[in-house]
Structure formats: structure tokens, C-alpha cells
Length: 78
Image (tube, rainbow, N blue to C red; front, side, top):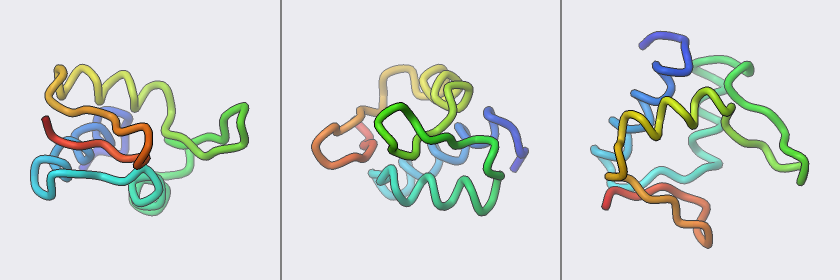
């Protein structure tokens, strides 16, 4: 996998296709370990999040086929 925002997004889509869901906490840990700290940041609320570049690439890839579950802090295949 490429260590780019696109590579992170591709991993996320594949993970969700395979398992059906991806929890944000698990995604962030995997991304930090396998892709690098540059793809995560701490937002204004003090929570760790994926970079804007990753989110943008992710949205382009899944084209509405993956939904964010705000209550469970996870993405799921729709």
C-alpha cells in the first residue's frame, strides 16, 4: 500500500468491504502504525481524527456506499 492519503483511503474502503465496519479508533491506530502520523491530527475538540486529505480521498472512493455512524464512531457499508 502506498503511504499516501489515497493509500490510506484505499485501505479503509477495502477493510470496510471485507469486515462490514471500521471503528474510528482502530482506523487511527492502524493508520498511525502502518502509514504514519502525518495522516492523523488532533482536532479542536481534542479528539484524534484522520487528515482532511484522507477524508477527501475516502469520500471520492466510496461514492456514498459507506456511511458514518456518529453514535458508534465507525463507518459501515451501506
